[in-house]
Image 1 (tube, helix red, strand yellow):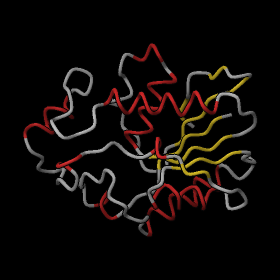
Image 2 (cartoon, one colour):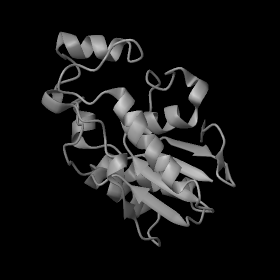
Image 3 (cartoon, one colour):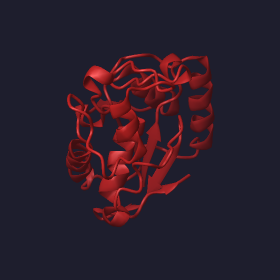
Length: 186
C-alpha cells in the first residue's frame, strides 16, 4: 500500500500565507494533527518512508514512523511559488486569484513553477518506487500531493487541483506488482 500524507499545520498555514518552499516547522496544532494521524496508522508497518526535504514534511514523517529511516527526495518538495511565496492568501494579487480560481485552465503566473512540472516530477518519483513492495509512506505538501494524485489518476482531468487537501489528510492506494490503484482518501 502507498500512503500519501500532507504535513501538519505550520504558523504560515495558520496565517493563510502562501508558504511554498519556505522551511517552517510544525506548530503545536500541527504536531497534534500528526500525532492523531500516527495513531490512525498505528497498525501499519512501513517498509519505506519518503519525505520532501522541508522540515514540516520530515517532522511529519518522523512522528508517524519513528521506527523507520526516512529517505529525502527533492521531487516531493512543494511547488515553487517564486516571487509569490509569502503572499497573504486573504488578499492575493490578481494574477494569483486568477490562477487559484481555475488551476486547470490558467497557467501559473510568471516566476512560479507550472503544474505540469509538479506532475512531471511526481510521476518520475512514482515510477522510481513502482518496484518496491510493502507499505510506503510519502510525506509531502498540498500541491505536491495533488501532483502525485493527478499522476496516479490519469483520467482525473485536473480534478485534484481544485480539491482541498487539509493538513494531515491521507490518501492511500494499493500497490500490487507495480500496478497502483486510484488513490482514495482515508
